[in-house]
Image (cartoon, rainbow, N blue to C red):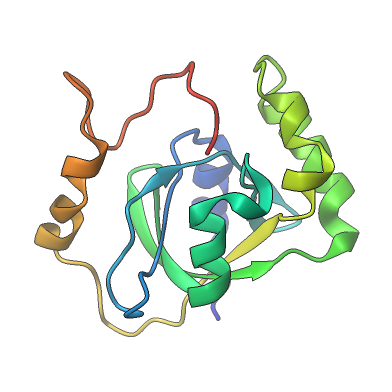
Length: 159
């Protein structure tokens, strides 16, 4: 696994548009992108499923252990792993800071989402990048009348 460049981490920390796509069961095809909240803590990108263990993207991320993310105008091949318990308080604090004004914040700090915090790291470079056709192939699943498939209304809760 590779480490994030500081510029990438800063962009990810500032962005509120992270879409996560764990691989499907074949281990090669990206799943449908799901918009989720993300925070950077101690040099790590961390996310939580709003619905805890019942979240489909969470189940796929743990089963496949890899996939892709798209945020801050970039696409990355990544590896998913459960976050260490030692960082959970810091992740809570980062969520409180970044999403303070959201009515969805409090549920994200409860035991269900908290216990399912995921650490996202860069995958080793393989030279394999998704083609534009692959990226476009998931767009119909996200298209909302008049909206970009990679944008989410600000009022939407995290997945």
